[in-house]
Length: 109
Image 1: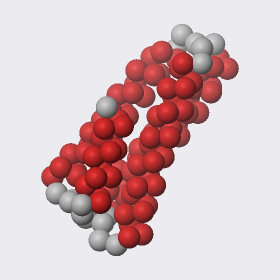
Image 2: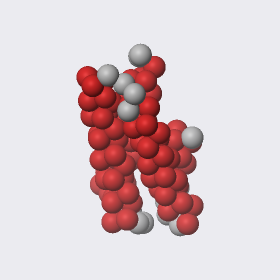
Image 3: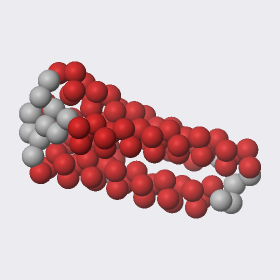
């Protein structure tokens, strides 16, 4: 689901379409990440301390990148210039990267 949201976000940016759909997509990303972190923390509660620490580090990076994405979307809505769009795309990439890291972490039991 997160991949679909990020793909939609990038598509809206390419089309310079920053209306309700753009905002809804950002909200969707934020909601999915918040829920993912909540469920992940519940899973980490039963893990060994070293694994909990590693998982929490990934979750913190994911939450921070999600926060930055939300802030940038609010500040540059609609992003008018290339640098603003680049920062927003980079923030979306960071969310995707840390989500992938989290999935890899849980798959590596």
